[in-house]
Image 1 (tube, one colour):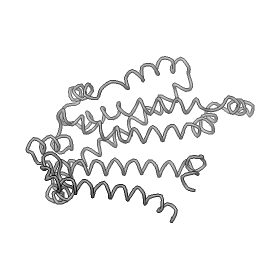
Image 2 (tube, one colour):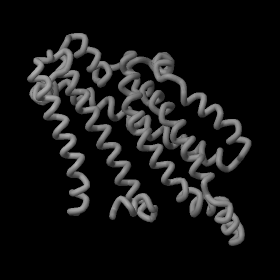
Image 3 (tube, one colour):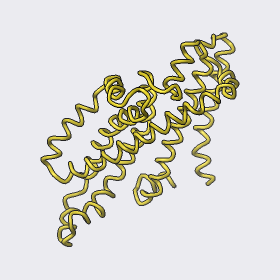
Image 4 (spheres, helix red, strand yellow):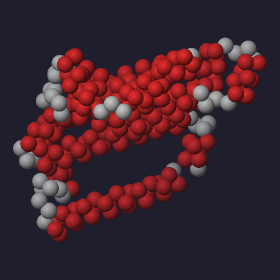
Length: 258
């Protein structure tokens, strides 16, 4: 425990120094709030903003989590199929790489037209598509990373394809999967908020940010940014905890515990 705390001390010091420098810069140079509000002003505005901010955050975060879950499930299924059949892989991978470069602003109006502005499924679709391809591409690489000698050993034991997948390929792919999920966690929140800029319920962070920025209430804007950042960090840490739970055997996790 003491060793872990020692590893956190540099990060905590850098964070505290950054906040202190931010506050001092705003105060010394008298920077206006519409350009960059001070951290103290943001914290002061949080209690007044909370009644409107809370339902907006819940709506956005729930859609982001749902989209992340849907996109990950379909990505895992597609990756298993692509790793199993070379023909599927040869056809799907170039499409996945091409679709992964599609800007999110192209997807948002289409999703709104399909499901309607007020439906949460429009946001869930955008997030699912956004996280699908990174997870799929990385997981395919992971499933194919098993050594040929290991596959031959499984075949010599007359292991079925299902057993080989569960006992060899999926464990070998876990580092790739968790790396992709850490990226997808950030993408899910970004995708949800950006999509909401193009319309939706008022109880969403994207609409909240648009409204408050339009009214020049920039302290409230930064409270939303602060809350979104905290949620993103929390989701990242949750994935890291799950990674340590199910990948304790991996060298990267063992090294982190030392």
